[in-house]
Amino acid sequence: MIKAGQYLYLGSFLGGLIFFTACFGSEKRTPIMQTGAPQPPADTPAGPQIAEYVRNILEDQYGNLWFGTNGYGIGVYDGKKVSYYSSAQGFNGQQITGIAEDPDKNIWFATNLGVVKYALSGDASGEKKFINYSYPYTFSSKQFWSICADRKGFIWAGAADGIYRFDGTKWSPFALPYPEVVTGEFITKATSWSISEDKAGNIWFSTNGFGAFKYDGHTFTRYSEKEGLTNNNVDQIMEDSKGNVWFGTRDGGISKYDGRSFINYTAQDSIRNNEVCVIYEDKQGNIWLSSEGFGVYRYDGKRFRNYGENQGLGVKAVQTILEDSKGRFWVGGGGGLFRLEGETFVPVTKQGPWN
Image (cartoon, rainbow, N blue to C red):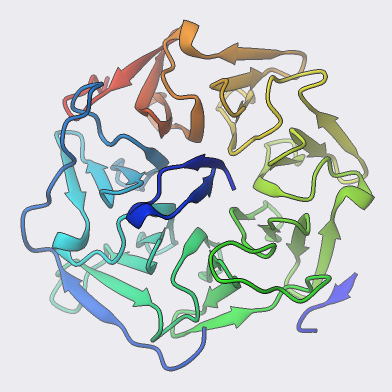
């Protein structure tokens, strides 16, 4: 134990940068009111999609569906229509790399320009607004890749240069005990694609070369290839309903950790490609995961079943999976948004079908 203190697919990226898919100084807040007409993305060859690239999906406590895109900011489906929020509405960032909802029902976004809070509770006048936290006023990095709101009210955000934590008043850098000095500005070994909280309140951090870290509020535990993890480049971490922790990796498939040992599932025995960007558990306890170039797999505890182009899924580079409160099952990535109907996926455009 170590005392505290001491990528995802190659796809399109804003401004011509390459995206691997797959807090210093004084704080400055910029409140942005919800004004102006959001501009939706233009229709694509595949139709009037939500976006060509849907990176993440969140259902908030009111049932709204939030879609993070790779170039159009946020799309929100309120049960009637899709609205968009990006730079035209003062939302700081068009590439959305993470979405989280805090206990006070505010929505938080990791973006290519920092972190944005949607103050759903509103200000003293009741007006809802965006609050931007950005470089160089708040952070020493522009590019953020992940975000998590824990049950205690802390907001955790993963940037190119490491982790930051928001305590409700200010952001501060949060040092993980990396085994070597981290350098670089865009993507580094310390880049965390996934931050999550387990049922016990532990915070899990993925890294891009150091494996994963668990923080229990006092100490860190590192999990790497040395302990049995299949690969040190970790893209996703998820705890299932049975308490197992699943790790999706860049080059080694997936690992399941039961608290004592690892079981690894790789292209040699279970899936077609070892790059796993997302892992998700549905309401029946099935584990869903992406496999770069081969859509998604569903694991029922005994076997892996693949859903790809033959099942209507037009997304090879899957980056987000969600089953919502109405039982609708969504998959997004490079190719847009899809919904599962029976055993077949159907494409979902700005006009639906939603139900």
